[in-house]
Image 1 (cartoon, protein in one colour):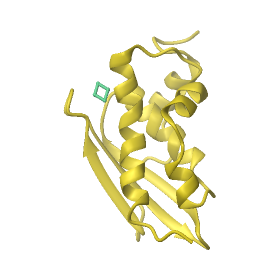
Image 2 (tube, protein in one colour):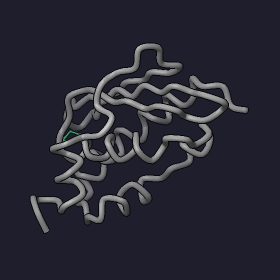
Image 3 (cartoon, protein in one colour):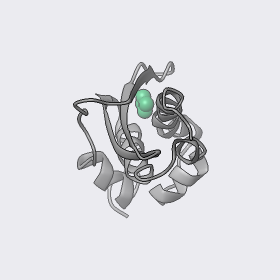
Image 4 (tube, helix red, strand yellow):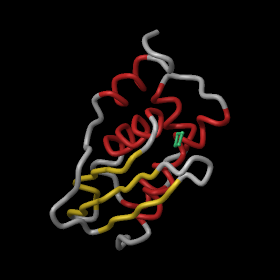
Length: 124
Ligand code: FES
């Protein structure tokens, strides 16, 4: 096991995928974890009824950044409804880590932001 939270969180936390912003997002949503003030923003671009691109930004802890990085990978090519149906359990299982309850809220932040962004997209 590397790092405090294991290999996957270490990798995605230090070398996050899809960090940045889109030129013309179809949806963009941002929120804060009220427990700590950390903030995540997610932008989505839709193509043929599926998420073609997802980017994230913000200032947050390593677990939240790793979660956003994983999530923006996982939603690519999913229809909006399927992306919004992803669960915290699924993200944590992709992380291959056991997170204490306080850290679960970190992993959950990008998921709730994603759901907020998906609400702005048309569902077919
Ligand atoms: Fe704030 Fe993790 S400590 S989201």
